[in-house]
Length: 342
Ligand SMILES: Cc1cc2nc3c(=O)[nH]c(=O)nc-3n(C[C@H](O)[C@H](O)[C@H](O)COP(=O)(O)OP(=O)(O)OC[C@H]3O[C@@H](n4cnc5c(N)ncnc54)[C@H](O)[C@@H]3O)c2cc1C
Image (cartoon, rainbow, N blue to C red; front, side, top):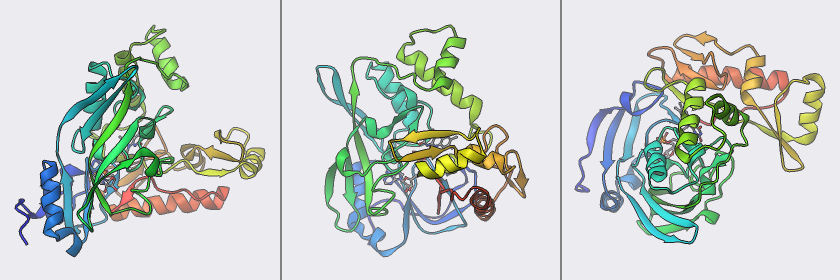
């Protein structure tokens, strides 16, 4: 059935993924409005063929050409839904660029998202892995998510409490993977600016700029500046940002590792668990700055794998597997990828 949308064939994905992998989709469709989402689902195409929803492509690695339908939401719009004492509810469509959305909120004096400034990608992906940076996560601000059920075509709102948010995790990455298309997200933001400077990198960068009590704009700009100093600019060097999640281990395991590695980077998570810095583990295994073929480990941050020029998804996978195995055999800790292989 023709969904009344333009379905393109043999569509190049090179400029649609920040790793810069040269893959081609056998079919490709852009969705510019909620009506387009509806039409596509009603056509049944996604029930007949494999599909993948591609936002800004900043968390994906294409392992080869994609033999199915790439669904690319580009719907735009930001609306103030309501305002009450101290808070606002703001709705943003999936195709809005996340970083532009954060800037727009700050310009309108809707506060909370400052520490999440500069994260690549689109609003529609923000609930999927519960994007986070500098002590804040999208879940701290998401009120509800509007979805299309791909199997039934039903449209529904899911409250934040139903989204199963965790560290770089949600039901959309887990048990409900591939079940929904997200077309908009409602955020609950504050009308009072209350900076969160718990991360030393931020407070130090502000001090260096001679700022004691930053405005929201100064904080967001500083976040972007700190990010730029540590992470590769996807326009210049292909990457998917942090490639691995920081592993969470039992407190007993962390303590036993600390005995042999007193300078290991460890953050307590509740009473029973600890988060280890994956970048530290990778660096200790000697991977920082190394290159294998056309893919490498970023010189400034061992957590980031980078495209050294024309790399393939298979090369990324091989390097990622080698790092995972090396860290596991040395520390007994198995790293998990944050980036998604497609
Ligand atoms: C340089 C760099 C720095 C980064 N820094 C951070 C960081 O600080 N914190 C962080 O959390 N992440 C970071 N990332 C990872 C990435 O930016 C986020 O995961 C981002 O949310 C991905 O958004 P995207 O639109 O590019 O999604 P994509 O990479 O296109 O897709 C990611 C996942 O979301 C799904 N998806 C996307 N849109 C929809 C939709 N509308 N409906 C249903 N499913 C959808 C996809 O199917 C896929 O499973 C970084 C990446 C880069 C390249």
